[in-house]
Length: 114
Length: 112
Image (cartoon, rainbow over the protein chains, first blue to last red):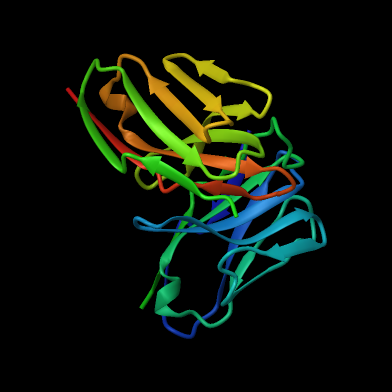
């Protein structure tokens, strides 16, 4: 069981470049989430999706975009990379977001903007 | 708005000790409270999930309790081992929300 898979694991970008962080899950979960984690700051929600074709902003959406064309995939796009976007990015998923369904996380993408 | 606080931020104990990690939340109308473990350079792994209607959950040496009235959850680790060293995070899912609110975590070191 692959669970939640994120690619790439590491990436270095120059200021102003763009890239897409990939996230796919094979558990048929309808809820998917993107977080960023900065040292000592906990997890901040960037975007989330409750199903294919439906996305919504989280706490820190500026500078990012998402799409959800399929149940399995939830890519996160950075259009104009800035040093403030240096962080570790986690994708997560859950089934229905219900009371007895845990969140499952990928291993993260470590992104540095120089 | 739900706020989740974890105390202490860091903890260092000798092997074999029983220990308690604390998680407090401001809105008691929660669906569930989840405890995660995060190893360095890795993602979060779900340890225990306590539903709103439950008081506790157990898995091996781990026991998590939930007291909604006081806005508290505790994670009890029995007979700690060096392999338990990690950061432990809790997350509360509020009623009517799709989004869990995370605490900042407790960094645990168990030394031999």
